[in-house]
Structure formats: C-alpha cells, structure tokens
Image 1 (cartoon, rainbow, N blue to C red):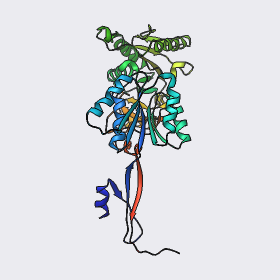
Image 2 (cartoon, helix red, strand yellow):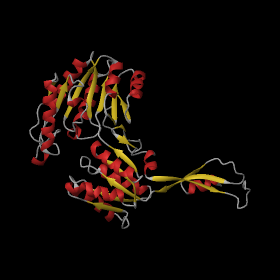
Image 3 (tube, helix red, strand yellow):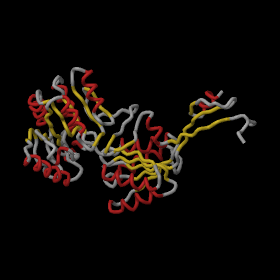
Image 4 (spheres, rainbow, N blue to C red):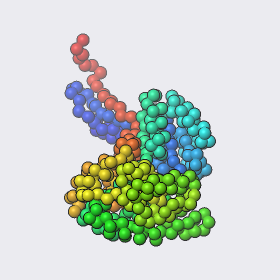
Amino acid sequence: EAASLATQIQGETIPTDKPGALSMTVRQPVGVILSIAPWNGPVVLAARAIAYPIVCGNTVVFRASETSPKTHALIVEALVEAGLPPGVVNIITNAPQDAPEVIDALISHKSVRRINFTGSTRVGRIIAEKAGRHLKRCLLELGGKSPLVVLDDADIDEAVKAAVFGSFLYQGQICMSTERIIVDERVADEFVAKFAARARELPVGDPAKGAACVIGPMIVPASGDRLNRMIDDAVSKGGRLAAGGHADGAQMPATIVDHVTPEMRIYDEETFGPITTVVRAKNTEDAVHIANDTAYGLSSGVFGRDVTRALSVAMRINTGSCHINGATVQNEAQAPYGGTKDSGYGRFDGRAVIDEFTEVKWITIEPSQQQYPF
C-alpha cells in the first residue's frame, strides 16, 4: 500500500520501526526559481534554465542576458504562446549598469527560493554570496579551463580531431571549450604539427557579411584586445605560436600557443575565444598533475589506446565530467552536467537536476492510537 501510494505521488517508501505505520519520501516543488542564462548559448542555455524548474512544478522569473535580450524574450514569448498559464514564466531585462541592483532585489525577494545561474565565475561568486545571506540554494555552472590529456599511446589523428572541435567550436566561447591540451612530450611534436595544420585550414570570416566560415567573430572587439595581451605575455615568457596569431578586433584566426608554462597568464586564465594552449608533460603522472593544476573543474578528456590506463587518469582528474577518447565539449540531456572547484556546484540534466528544483519531504501515516513515552 505504501509503495502504491508513493508511486502515485512521485515518492518512494522507506523503512519505519513503528508497527502499522507507513513511511515515504516525496518531492515537492520549491516555489519561485530565479533563472539567469548567458549570451553564448542563448537558446539552449535559456531553455534548460526555464524548462527544468517548470517541469519540477515551479514557476520561473527569468533574467535575460543584457547581451542577448531579444533572443531570450522570443523564447519566453514562444512558451506563452504555446499555452503556459499566466505567471508560470516571467522575464526581466535590464541595462548592464543596473544589473547589481536588479539581481540583489530578485535574490532577496521572499518569493524566490532558489537560483540557477550560468555564466562567469566572477559573477557566480557574487550571486552565491548574495544567496547565502538569505539561505537560498544555488545551481551554478561557471567558467572552465578544460584539459584534454593526450597520452603517449593515443591515436594522434583522433586526438587532433577532438582538439580542433573542442577548441574552436563557437569561436571557443563555451565554458567547456578545450583550453589546455596536455600532451605527453614523447608524442607532442607529432600532435602539435598535425593540430596546427588542421587549425590553419579553418576558414575565418563574418557570417553576417555572407562569409562561409568555421571561426566567426567573438562577441565584442574587447575580447580580441584581451587575448592579444595574453598572447604577448605568453610569447615573452617562452611560448610559441604554432598556428594563428593576434586578433583584429573581434575577429581572430584559430590560434595555438605551444610550450605554455605556469608563469604565463594563459596557463590558467580563461580565454573564451578561438585560442588554445599546449602544455607538454613529462609522463602520465605529470599530465594528471597539470590537468589538476587549475582553479577550474568543469569538463575534461583523455586520449589513450589503453582504456584501463585512460580510465585511471580520468578518475584522477578533478572535473565534473571526463570523456575518454572524446572531446571536452559534450552535453547530453540524460547525463548530469556541472563542475567542481571554481566551475561551480550543482548539476543540470539527468535525474540530478530534479534535486536542484524540488524539496524532499518525509511523510508518515501512523495509527491514530499509539503509545508515547510520556
């Protein structure tokens, strides 16, 4: 009877030591969820920020990105036109200079019970601090510096394919982009030569002007200025440009900086552009050390023909996901997605996301007459 009842109300039975009693846990909606999505995946990241809370029975206040407000508004309009009742999803836009005041008002409002935010680590810290003052739980998917480890027995051609895709998709403007390629020095020269050759082949242009390209413009010209300073810093400290070069405003070719070391800004600072780094490792142990030598922990990859050894390496890399013989850029709806360390906490997708947007409640149904100690 308890099992049947628990199934009806989406719960599960748990043991109880009281004779004649039924015991179960159930999940209930939290209430109002504040969802904040970024500009770099304006449709898919907004959709998950809105859909998951609603599916779990909540309502959503969606704060649109200041950089892509019209796209975010169209998503909400589509949901409303599809038949969502009034008040289930609500959208707020604001000017960039008003963001601190608006976010503070939203987080502190008594109706908002949880927050999900996808964006930079810097802003994620601010949101977590504000939420903490009000004892409100957050799901934070933040920045990354994802490593791709290439072991000495890797299929180099396949590793190069994954590196090209993971480094340059969307101009590298993805939190799980491959920003650090850690290659065993015994195969590093071969890997870099093939990787650089592929990178040079990627067409660069502006699709808004009719160009057919893989590498389009970055979000703003200031991104190019920032990356140019990182390149200059790396080269001044021994780094070598294996492919590409400096940005011209928002436009930049696929760029690879080889022989990167910890003294360089680009070693651990998120680039968020069409540029990646190669760090040469002495051996497998050194590769694991380098992979973990970062403040971030979102996604990673390991290439090696010996799957047992590759799995051992994957288990030791401190990231929320690791893909053996695959790219760092991967996301599937049934798999939990999120990070560790400065990449945030909590998980989107899979069964894990249910915990983020519901509360667990313990319910017992006991005999109306029972004995108490006093």
